[in-house]
Image (cartoon, rainbow, N blue to C red; front, side, top):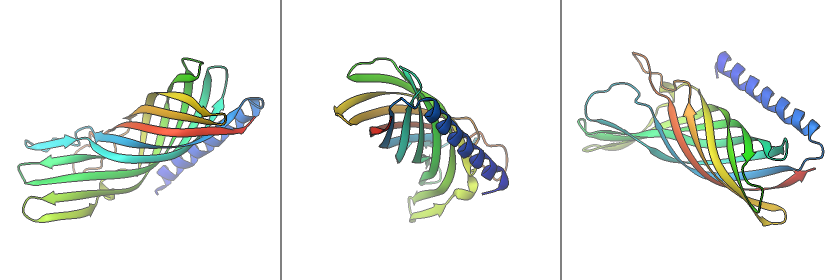
Length: 222
């Protein structure tokens, strides 16, 4: 990791810790929850560059898993920082050259989200959103050629080592047991930094990701 990226990740981790400690301090009588979640991903990039006719960029399907803390800040609002592994990327179909590629970019991400409850009954509907910073762990392309079989190519060098997004979503919380809450959530991540690093020219690639997750959470402190 270069110095700039290391600084960004370290600063984000420090901010995360300060926020958590601050709100844990002022919410000593609030119920804090911890949870885990898994999800499915539909991801793409905005057109990397104009590669000519016959190139189709399609959504790529992946996997996510993470853990989160839910910190109430008031009757209807809370903070939900998350640490997650997420697979992004895209599918490329180059018909004029006779090959296809499924590119999987794997990130460790830290979303720091605000959660706002819209209903306060047994099925609590909520909105969620906030900034996310991610570190690129790996990138690979599974390439299939019409006449020459297939190959796996390491593509980490053509992507930046980080991604920054803004995510928004909606979800519900349903109490299935006295100390266990089910949390399905649908989110959209909108990339705000260019993640592709082409050999020549300027990249126009921003990540665009949909995530459908199912999680469970339980109280850990009050």
